[in-house]
Image (cartoon, rainbow, N blue to C red):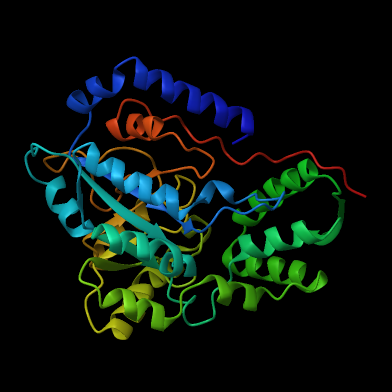
Length: 353
């Protein structure tokens, strides 16, 4: 989403709040509650090039969100309780469930102290290849290459392509273009492409991925806390829609099996990798249920309805954009009043040498 679109969306949400639409929606369309989705939680950075900033918030913002949820009268509940409330009659108070995708290291270092201080439950969805040191955070590799280099070369669709990106705006356009292209590739081709790109530009993708992810000691520490639910995010965190059904099913079932073996307890909840409508299909929802998961969460925005009206294996979540700071806007989103669609990543027009 462009900066102009972000500004317009924020303005619409602010106007909805002051119009009283939040109050109307909370009673008319607010449902049982909401599941909030976060990825990275870390201190603010000064880097000029931050294409993934929308996927992170600061510890201070997380603290403010939790305080606001309590002030607004939400019950902050575990994902297990969220699923239970989704099939019951409406309760007097709505719930909020906090979830974190990707098992980023900073969930332990920066988010966990905030969550512990507030004594609130939360869920972390782990792609099991990452604590094993085998996961590839291709989005971080792409960000690092573009941040460091002004001249970038790689093979796209069998052809050598070269890009010149000196200005920050050009780097953002190139990131959007290449990220969209990579997301559309089958996992094996994506892995080959990002490895080639990182090798050409002396970026150690394996080390970068390991440093950004929790290890098994981190996960064991969280798992020992009764307020923490460890869920699965498959093995390698692939775009399931780019895989054959048999391969997608193996990712779903093996992710569960690996975590259950490591933690010696059932793993009941799944997060579809990326989770937007282009990332998974109806067949994957069925696979999640057949694998024995109680729930599966997406990144499709919305509220969780009561009396079983929301499919537990395609649960909506509200992602809070790291570029937005207004709690008023968040309250409107959580009310069910409006959910502006997220613009697809554009295929930017880049000048090629």
